[in-house]
Length: 160
Image (cartoon, rainbow, N blue to C red; front, side):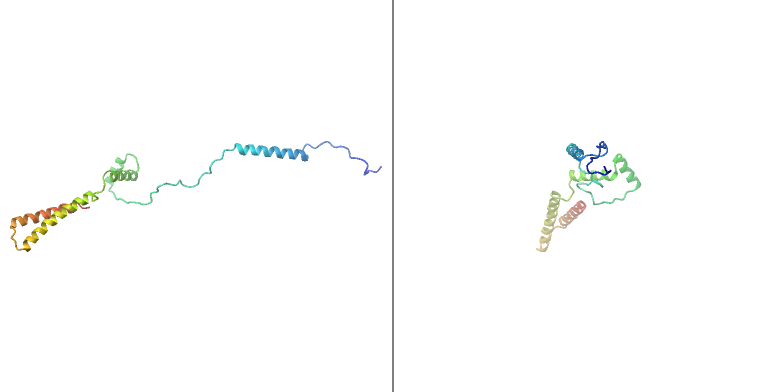
């Protein structure tokens, strides 16, 4: 017989442990897919971390500048008690505005208008009397003019 005869079957070779058969490969792939699905189901999903600076709900974008002497600055630093002077000053200013509304609003303006109306009424009465030919005693006129001056000076002093 010839060396390469078709009639002979080759001898059975031992299986190679490093080479998978198609059945072994399919079983391995199924096992890996099941493990991956179980791992995916058990994995805790976290939100991605945001990069950059944190955002502020109400950002402070406007600046107010203030010039102080050394002594004034030292006083404010001491009163702030270790806090930043700007934060301390802003809090105190906003607290005072919330507690005591600014002068010249509402009732204050109404009171000043009433005072000016009374002064103007007195002045008009005197001028009408003089123009109609009535004689007004000079002491009374002087007293009315002086009261008008004092009232105007007081009102000007109260105006911001």
